[in-house]
Image (cartoon, rainbow, N blue to C red):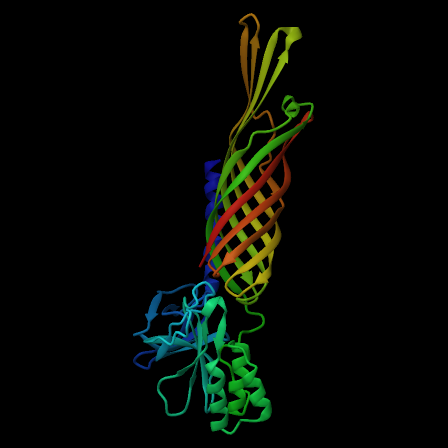
Amino acid sequence: MRNLTLLILLLILHEFQGFSQYHFQKGTVITSLGDTIHGYIDCKDRSFDPEKFTFTRSIPKDTLITFSLPDARAFIIDKTAAYEKFTVNVSQGAVDIDRLPDKIDTSSIEKTVFLKVLVKGEPLSLFSYSDRIKTRYFVLVPGASMPQELQLYIYSPNHTELRYKKYIGQLLLLASKYGKNTIEQQHRISTSSYISQDLIPIVNEINGQKVKMESDISPNRIILNFFVGAGISRSYMAFSGTDPLAKLTSSPVACKPSIIVGFNLSEKSNSRAYISEMLMLSNLDYKIQQVTDYSANSYIETTTFHLKMTNIALANSFGYKVYNGGKTGFYLGAGLNINFSFYPTNDLIIIDEGYYNTNSEATIKDHYLMKRVWYSLPLKAGLIIRNRVEAGVNWYVPSPLPQLASAIGTLYDMQLAGMYHF
């Protein structure tokens, strides 16, 4: 049994190793010396723009090389994103509603970063930069070496949120400077939000053409996001039929801990719908007992069922973010789990205590025929916070496990789980 468990785990880990290579996509690195290197770049989904990245020359993975800011001028992930290194002034004012200052915060720091290329054109190029504080947008004009931030200030005097959209004035001046200050363009700029979907068309219009956006993502691109976590389940069994344990009016509850690893697949990083694949390893130590008084026969019978179960579940589910606030979301989902179970202990213990000190005890091994492979159906709900931390609850449709002619045992499960996404 141990060898079979080890074999299953090794096979699953091998599959996860295979999936991990899909983080790498074809790309190009321009080193700090100006050399161009072609290969594959780790492009796993990130909430923040990278300060370093991992590169390999071939897949299956050759030697992994980590490039940091001093090592590279730029890097491009084919059909996904491009980054260029610049030294810029990065604003520090918070935008989190719980941390808003009571007056405009114009503080900034000079910092060397990889800016994500949104538009590469003439006369303007547009970039973005995201860190733990916020996402910012930058424009680079001809003759300048340092992109300038398009500035948005959010503050909250007297607990009222106010926005100073300085970027609107900056864009109007640029449109006027380069002869693109039409009525339509003025309206587009004046009503724009501080998001890439609004800023990219404005910069393209100023450039006078539909320039290529290096960050365009192929509609068929799949985002792969790995996570690890743990869970705790409230589990109990109920019996029906003519079995002695079916006489119980209530069943004791046991806690079942779980270790979880898995990944989500989605069409793009901000997609509402996703597919989740998980491996869960759990252990259940469960006892249920029934005491029957046979007064007519002068003895009391105690029937105890002791079950220890190790379960490996391959969990497949579909999730949908009914609320998707960018970095925070609330999801609902459902799925199908394929369970492989092993039972180190599966004992039915019967103790007869006679009124005249005539006691007997019998232990029946594997009395209940427990399923080795079985299916369960989870219904899921939960929160994803800052695209990193997930807290969820999973309710499982009751699943019949042991089956005899005289009894059917049904497993009831509700799980609380927490995961961390990479």
